[in-house]
Image 1 (cartoon, helix red, strand yellow):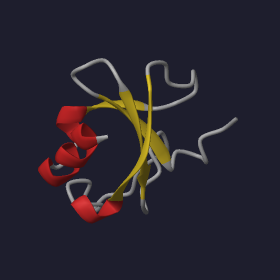
Image 2 (cartoon, rainbow, N blue to C red):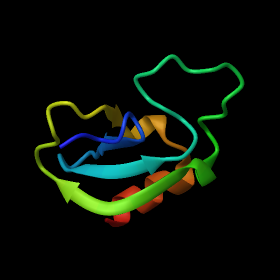
Image 3 (cartoon, rainbow, N blue to C red):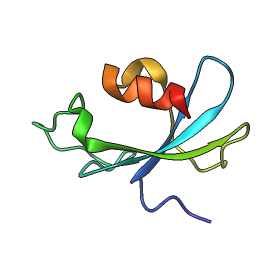
Image 4 (cartoon, one colour):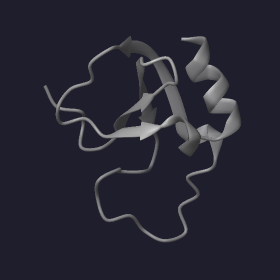
Length: 77
């Protein structure tokens, strides 16, 4: 099962869980264009899915790479 060409990423939380997030208008793992603001919290949609083991092909980012409003949503899941 794929992750839709870099549109979904998994965020590693401090407690060891991974949360799946949909990223709008950004393709992680691809050549990114300049001028894209990754700190815009409206680009991230927390899906509510969490797991202990993410898929092998998933892009995993740390919680620190997200804007503060998105971090609080990730911790609520």
